[in-house]
Length: 586
Image 1 (cartoon, rainbow, N blue to C red):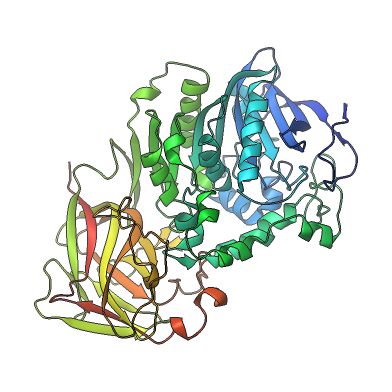
Image 2: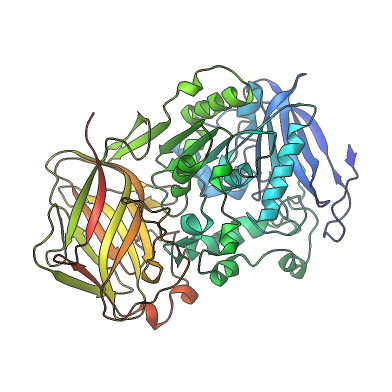
């Protein structure tokens, strides 16, 4: 059918968009109705475009929705070929049959997996992306308001039972936190899978340092290629052969119809109103929550899921933390079963026992793999907090502080220094929040600290995990010394949270205490293994594996202020220590 609805005046788009309806047979056998380019009007007159997949039978069904900018018509294999090949190599049985995976989109659910179980899947191109016209401003208040209105649209359609659940990875997770805080009436539950919450601390300004590596690459490679009006030069719709992004616009029109994404972060070095309006108020989230994070995701895909779980006001909330790549777990049968049971309970009102599920499920990592374990809370109530004191002279981590003070210096832009424990005398589990108290000095007026928690076997080989984004150590943390002032309302003895509301320069050569958050982790260190704290002046990278979460923008870290020499003190009146959450055996 022809849909003659049109976007707001002045929006660069040509003519009406045709909605295509077809009935397709899923890989599981049952048929589903596929409606392509359905019009979703929002409050300012703009019309977003959505794909709707629904059961081929009469009835009203719960809605599973995602709203974002990766393209509702861009097949996973076309837009993200390396990740698609990795997923199929790791789990070759996931999408092996017939048309299985035909409608699979990056970081969203597979309609062929969900629709046969009585769900409607709705995938919406967000404003300024794909088939949806408008100004492209990712995660902006306007985009989140659009999402809120799209939820209300879906909740009132004739095929909807009035309950909308949100699910998706990363981008599609952050926007869930944000829109849930707006409390749209038809929103019934959310499943944010590996997605940050705090726009400043979780993703873009780690410890106050600009995380430009991922940000600068993500914007052109994953967003601008799908901007509405780019002409679909990268890939085309598999169903129609037409561009995924609507009519082609000139480069000048495209540039004028989007934000200066990377530039905004450089213009906002402190956690000001610009970040605060993009950070959800978790106390306003009251719907049931299933939050899933990744131990291997420091820098993007971990901290927010833990904070979202802890901060959400909903009495019905669960936390699951896994390992592996940030996209594979989402599609694994055991995790899909967990997602469906959650939505069966809160979108279909099935009394399936989900209310009695343990509130916390954790993958406990070791050098030999990982095991799943049920818990009741985080931090774990049985945590034994252990201080390991830095000894600058011996480059060691010890259970007791060194009697005499000492210091060690390193190149402020260099590989830094290691502090190592003695081999553990018994198997030791570390699960939860980690922090470091350091006494530091700089030869300049500022100092960037890159802290890396690492593990080594008896033969000296390092324990390396498959992380969310890349090969990863046990965990990481960051701090710019001029951002050392803490937020007293949010900080805990085991978890310092900088306020990031002012810049307090250092006096060259003067010693200062600073508290640094290392992101939460879980690892069992067998007897004979050692733990190492590496303090560096740059990003930690494994040889031959360039990191994605880099912090090396010349405008943020260039110039003499971040050169020179950095010093770590220990012992005496300047005790530096690592605080570890040691978990005793049950």
